[in-house]
Image 1: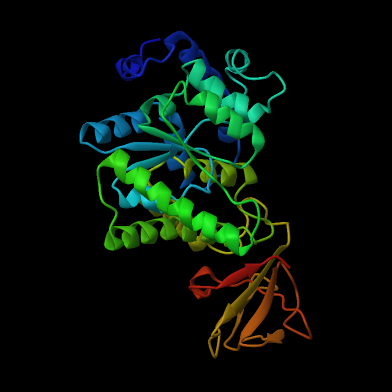
Image 2: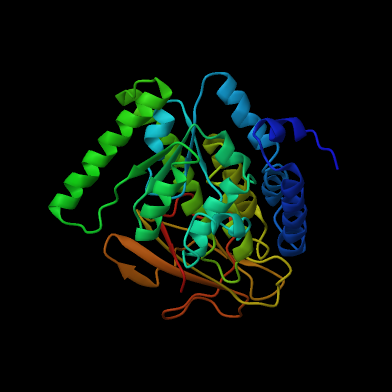
Amino acid sequence: MPTPYDDIWEKLNLDLPAHEGLLEVLGKFYGDIYLSQSGRLQGMEYLDFVLSEVHGLRIQELLEAKARGRKVIGTFCVFVPEELVLAADAIQVGLCAGAEIGKEAAEKILPRNTCALIKSFVGFKIARLCPYIESCDLVVGETTCDGKKKAYEIFADYAPVYVMEIPQMKQACDRELWQAEILRFQDEIERVTGATITAPKLKEAIRRLNARRQVLQRLNRLRAASPVPISGRDVLLINQISFYDDPGRFTAKIGELCDEWWSLPAPSLWGRNRASAPVTLAIWWTNPPKAWKVCWRPSPSAICASTAPVLRPMPSAWSILWSWPGTSKPTGSSTTVCLSASLMPSKPSRWKRP
């Protein structure tokens, strides 16, 4: 069936019939695994849209950026410092290695006993199924295993490849090696992009990527609730999308998702359609406030108190436990309480599962 992106895929030299079959399989897979879930947060609609356009609109964005002179750098591993790529005004994307599609093609140039991950990324290239690989001006590999070391040598016959040496230990000589590899990678990125990486550009790139890391950390802190109001598969989806979506846009959308989660009325704050399940949350933060307005709900009528229940005093920190539903006021080492979302600490430094 013709699509608006056929011309783009043809220019990238994809195998159009095979690629169409791949998208059909992935679409059914996504519907069965993700869209079949009930009670998903509204913010997940953005992630659904991104996946629906994973080989379409995002590829179009990359090609439009390339037309304006920007370079696209493909990577397989988080060891590759994306900050240097962004500081050179290039775009970094994660490459395919999550399916055994193209395995037969990969085994024509790789040993049959090579691991599935290596066969996957080589197979996507040889079978001409991945528009991300075809959009890259440079593919960056890393020496995280012996199989990859040899695979990158072979892969270099089919795509421009640069390999970073990853230290295998944590001794002083390994730190020196990694520092040298970072500087060598900087030289390569500057060569490919024609840009000069300056301290202000690098500082801004670090800020953007730290913001993305922080919003993912916030998401994971919220998952400390029991029961958790987002499925593990949706969290996996969010982390996967972080590798190829625009960092600024992704950070904003996941921040909105966390805000939506945070603003849900209790008990919906910690569980959707799970009113009968107990909700337990432990929060550990520094510089605690002097007083809290805590709302108890042992019955339909609420009793409000303005004290701060300190259950386990810790050096320079408090550890407080809330559980819902319940019937008792705080005594001893436990507190039974339903806390209104508006009264939550704005910036807890750490969340811990009880």
